[in-house]
Image 1 (cartoon, helix red, strand yellow):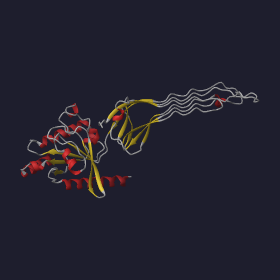
Image 2 (tube, one colour):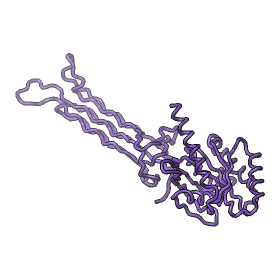
Image 3 (tube, one colour):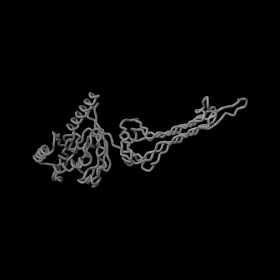
Image 4 (cartoon, rainbow, N blue to C red):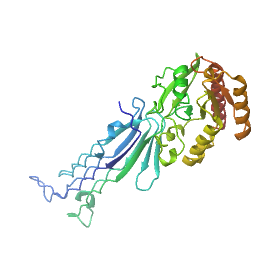
Amino acid sequence: MKFIDEVVINVTAGKGGDGCLSFRREKFIEKGGPDGGDGGDGGSIFIVADYNLNTLVDYRYTKIFKAKNGSPGEGRNCTGAKGEDITIKVPVGTSIIDDETGIVLADLTTEGEKFKVVQGGFHGLGNTRFKSSVNRAPRKITKGSLGEAKIIRLELKIIADVGLLGMPNAGKSTLISAISHAKPKIADYPFTTLIPHLGVVKVSEYSSFVMADIPGLLPGAAQGIGLGISFLKHLQRCSLLLHVISISPENNDPLDSAKKIISELETFNKDLSQKPRWIVLSKADTQPDETYIEEIKSILSQELTGNTPIYVISSVAKLGLSQLCHDIMNFIDTKNEANMSRE
């Protein structure tokens, strides 16, 4: 199934049914009086988060959604039928944005969360409603109102505890495949990862976290170079970012690689650039010079702001993975406990 994480759709709620103008015409009943019923409300459109979905591909070509109109009222005080509502199912983690104003209308982050995106029109009133002691034969009714209409943008931001970022061929996909059951494509050329991948990392019998891998970034991604920064939004819900940097002989300047990625983060979103970010030096099995590794760690510690943890790993040789996973789990548990105490 093709991964689609952003679509624009048109949603129009149904019109309310008009009220009915009617008078009773029954044998043996003198001066029957008004009996026009109200119309039915127009159908509304709801968007609901569904855990079974992981892409917005269903709405790539089906872009127009219109709810049913309410039926008009009828004689004998019969109310018109309500227009049928429409429910649009989207993956958990989908943001609903007004495409004309850019305002975020809702953020569906839990299973079954539901949002009414457009309200159906309200019903019109039949002439029975206007009967009074001074107006016993009213000929007044009201029309049903139009339903709301909007152009909305659906943006999927996958929900994960930890996000991986780095240059192409930094070792992100190999890392997530080594510590989870995720099976992203791995090859010795850039951009083998074309879409985000999720993997569940099980640290112990009762503790685990979700990790997200996104396509690699190139300098100038903010200007559209490479795959651009279209997938960076998938890291915005992560509690922790792992900045993966290759220390293989092919990467001549790990510090320069780190600074370029940080620059792209700051260009894309200041809040994302300020998230907790750990440095992971990958492909340690390809670097025979241990002195060089220690020098790189020292340089990164001095150049990067804050007390940024630095890990040295090899996904192929399983070096340093256990410690990294346990430290991530401790970080997530501590953050969750802090959030619960604030609540």
